[in-house]
Amino acid sequence: MLEILQEFWTSTGFPSLINLDSVRGFFQSPIIMIIIAFVLLYLAIKKGYEPYLLIPIAFGMLLVNMPGADLMEDKGLLKYIYLGTKYGVYPPLIFLCVGAGTDFGPLIANPKSILLGAAAQFGIFFTFIGAILISKLGVHFDIEAIQFTGLEAASTAIIGGADGPTAIYLTTRLAPKLLGAIAVAAYSYMALVPIIQPPIMKLLTTKEERMVKMEQLRPVSKKEKILFPIVVAVFTILLLPDSAPLIGMLMFGNLIRESGVVPKLTEVTQNSLMYIITILLGITVGAKASAQEFLQLRTIVIILLGLVAFSVGTATGVLFGKLMYKLSGGKINPLIGAAGVSAVPMAARVVQKEGQKANPSNFLLMHAMGPNVAGVIGSAVAAGILLLFFGS
Image (cartoon, rainbow, N blue to C red; front, side, top):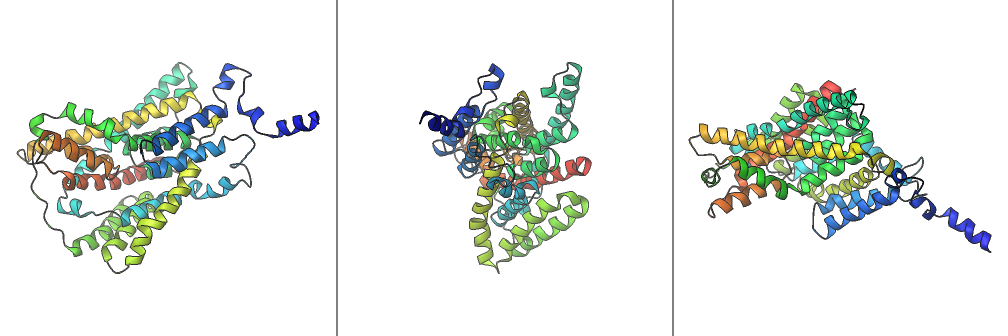
């Protein structure tokens, strides 16, 4: 009887849950990842931080770190679902859904705001260069954790775009082993936009600048809204073919919305398809965060570099907004530059909130949506540029 019980015990996952062979072994054991998964679930459910994505990511992380489940091994359930992430199918489909739910009217009404979306992408390239320089330092001191190849540096830097699907798409193409760390970092910073951005916005602007009330945007015609996705898709893809999967799907989704003749497609794309793809993408991204791949010093370095990328992107957006404030004779509120980091629509809401703190009668939401949606295009273009130089 005891032998049967002992055999049953060894067949369970409990004996493998904690590796106590060494201190290092313990801190790379699945139980640490299970705790991290619980923390993410708490933040998503209790605090409401990006629940639609953090819940699938956290539960995928939980499942893949269950000893003996082997869900990401050959013939494992998540291994098959992961194929859509591995081959870059899910992120463009997310962009299709985002396009169907996005109103580019504020950007069309104020085309100058695309410059703010472009300026906010500077954080990506700043961090890319920084990661390369840090890597040289790592080689000099023989610290493997801070050594990045060009592919890994590019994948880490894209976190600064605050666009989860873009970060996932680029990472699966360039550095799939880093997918778990980069996805968790990207979505964490998206969720923390209301905490990270306000101090940077206040530091770089005066109260007088934050109080600026902007003129109401002009009405945008239906014809302009229909032509916009077609023109942007053709021009951007001809200029940068590697951006086609993301830009193409984003603009196709928007054309479905603005055409007005396929309301059922618009409804399905905005809702059912978005939720289905979000579940599949989230749970498979979480499944890449196994203890062996995630619990490394490099993960901490990636998360810190992602914070630098996001912070620099916010700062450059605001600084470019200050330049536009000066050139316009004080008619443009520089706060709207912070919305250029993508993170739709949360970044625009943060701008609205900070603007109203300085001037209760201020209404910056629609003005901020211009650079916000421009940031979505900008992050996809940045990914296309990195793919142009580093993609196979």
